[in-house]
Amino acid sequence: MPEPTRLTGPLRRLVGALHGAGAEWRHGYVLSQETGLKSGTLYPLLIRLHALGLIDKKWGAPEAEGRPPRHLYRLNAGGKAFARKLSATPLPGVLAWDVKS
Amino acid sequence: VNALARWMADAALRIGAGRHGEWISALRNELDYAPDSGAALEWALGGLAMSVAHNLEQTFFPWTRRPDEPPPFGAAALIGFLAVAAPAYFVGAAVLYVLGAPIPATTFNFVSPPLLLLGAALCAWINLGAMLAVGTGGSRALRVRPRLINMALLAAALLVIGGLAYHAVMERVAGW
Image (tube, rainbow over all chains, first blue to last red; front, top):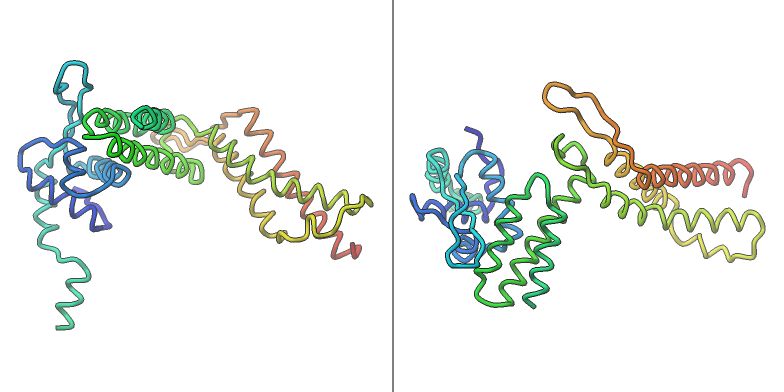
């Protein structure tokens, strides 16, 4: 399965949050609060992860009368494997520090 | 503030319709769940920025567009107009100056010709890119989707480029 080539900090935070949710579905706004990412950063990342086949998405039912339905996201099997691999890969800065010390 | 956030989210949906339409709809729907107006505005602003960035990417790099996506004719026309308007003004001023009109040389002499040429070339590039579409699947054939405004701007850009080139040659050869 293809994987993102640029393992940026925001990507790591998003994958970490989705991985932490386990099998639970998460809304975009909740993910934004959990990761501290703005919508303009969060959604392009979600689009990338979905295009790579790492997350599942679905429309959930409206939470109350008159409110719109919400998109829900969670990691699929490939996404979980990628998350585990990502958590085992240190950030470049950390690696450089480790090598120096 | 809420009305402004909604307007921005609707604008994001209009601009970004196409490949990411479903995602931008999802982003817009989340507005109803924002805890306050400030958060809603920030959320909508992010969506608008994402849509504009996507639109600009498709405008400047037409090969990133999927064959079933509508070309960004409007964005190409707007950016093209801005990119060609300045060179057109300076070329016009230069031509009038050469013809003897009482225009001070500083009217057109403070912007470098390469910059003007870049503006005109940018206009030609994005309008041509908007009108060209690559075929689907195995077919890589180019198709042209002509739009009057894009063709007019392309023609204007080529005229400006011609004018600049002519002026540069005459300046060197005839010592204008």
